[in-house]
Image (cartoon, rainbow, N blue to C red; front, side, top):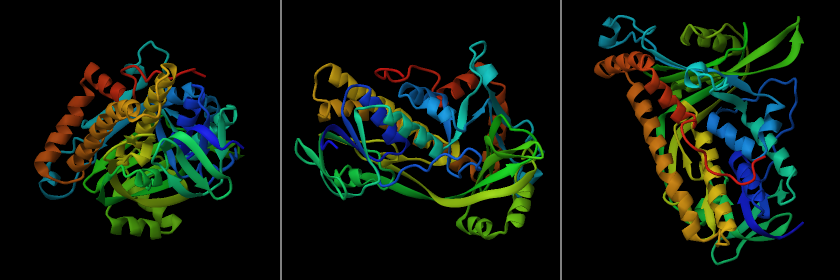
Length: 430
């Protein structure tokens, strides 16, 4: 194996592998390091519990770096519709309001947003493992990439012109540029002293993969309650035929206090099924089986700087946001796209692609956008996760009016899914 590269990427997850594919297509020699490979794909097994709602923009980025065909050949679930509503409250003054939940609902439909354009969906719900594996298959097709995985980093030297990373199994690697895509607990961010703001939310999230009756849904929806949102994300059909019927799956997300989440985690499968069916909105299909469950704390974080001389960070290493609208991974893919574009343009111009002056363009274009989305998610989180009577009245009116806003409503969702403007210019499309 080589030991000298143009770029070393720490983290071979979804964002890191995307950056590797994009930079390799720009002619750079790339090393990418991780401690664990993605699990093998097994066609007939139930979907894995960690999933992402990939936007239109993320799909285009993944197509551009050559990974989308590998993902689409496995498992994904397109959704054509996206709905948001608020459940009626039984508490305080809100209990005296007439039930207008059927009206206080906004639904977005691909047919309205892309009329006559042949675009049949707003996005896809895909298992994280499937996305990562598709990207690893795309990396394997590129001679400019060497994967050091599984391996462990012993030490990093991120000062000076030549960056060095020492691995437990493969010795010392050197490069002009080190990119940290190593998650929220990023060692690259820490070692480079880029700083970080971090705040934990009071609520936690409970995630549950379920098997349900009926047919595969083409809608993902989120229903706001005073304790937080409850979401339904349809997943790809999978598993062996049972009595001639294929199994349908979904991912359910429930925000609540730590005590409430602990209670959900400790329920038997039968108790949990009954609770989900009782507490979720009536749109929830009849549930047959609990496949998997997990919970995690909610926090937001943002790096003070994304770059320094010869170092850049992207994805969760740079920022994490409230996941209520599923925007975290999509922001990470846009980080990857802009970083690829900035570095590739510097290569074409014979500039020093690892210089802070070049990398600062990436920070300039992405940090403000990420902060804006973080603020917007907080506005939804704090604005809806309460039972304040005046706020509730305004929210219900707003949701109902938004559903009748026509072109304005469609432009808002086009912006949210990255279909309203030009994507970063990535070199050598697949």
